[in-house]
Image 1 (cartoon, rainbow, N blue to C red):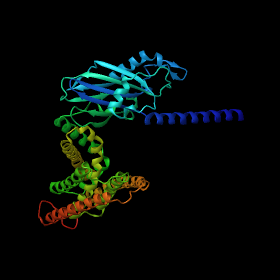
Image 2: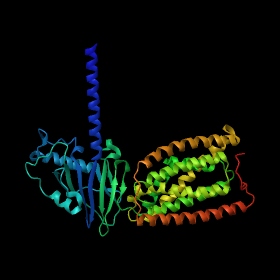
Image 3: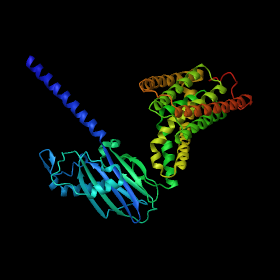
Image 4: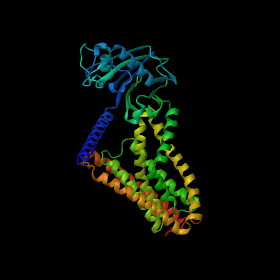
Length: 443
């Protein structure tokens, strides 16, 4: 029995050690999963210079000698690697896939730093690797340069990568696009992004960012819960339209400011915004339970809308690289997409809420129960996000930081003044099912 127990314990320890080793290797693998590349557009041709990690070419099978690649016999395997790159990464001109007229490549050591600029990388690929160079298996790079004939430098170019699909978004193509006669732009593309335009037309940029805006609001569950809290106690289209319009104007204000880099910077700000968004859900839900005053709701909705605008801006900043030269068009289109998504959500949410209030949870008790459920969810989010915020270092005061803070304080005060005037006008306007200044009941 003791011998059997000792063997089981030994096997268990070995399994744990193997699991830890695999986890560490997998983590290290993901951190290094980057393909670096340049796309340079010249009259009559496009140059594509790329560096891919050796471990991505498992099917190529470079010749090995013990634990090293046999560099002197690797020419056939290198040709197969170049073919694999062309198969996995495709350049398009006006939607037509380009075919390389010339390709060259070489192996490089993991310590090589030639891909810090296009000129260095291009020269490096043209230089032969010294015979006898020691490159360990799955370490180092395959560097390549491809030349593609093109019709015109003014065409619309795009790129698609399917390399390492099993890695998903962990494998990134870090690309520097260098159009003829224009400044270069940096982009990060993954296999899940599909075909990405390098220099999109304004129409393509607009349609793409409208879709991104719609997807952002439909997958932003905290924003959706906040919308639900806003409309739970309201009655009549005028009340709903007023509150939603105030929310829209407010979050558009901070979204525009963030797009022009006027938002506070630092690692503390994103978790602060996420915590404040969760707190806005909790507050609105508790206000629904305690009783709603329309004037106060309009004012608080506007202030919280400013916070949600910062949250929306993160979805924009992540995708701004795909705007090309159409930054303003993409910004406006993203905001339009947010509003379209918001309308779609309300088109489903309001009828469903009406059915629930009429047949499932009628009268004021239904509003209280729904708001309590939402408050509980928002509370857990707020605690979790506040824990992240607490562990994040806060910035030291600086002149630039104080200037940004003063800008937003003035903006918030102006917005609060405008919202207060709107609320007073609503209170003084009779009829149309508006509530009294005291409370909006759920009756």
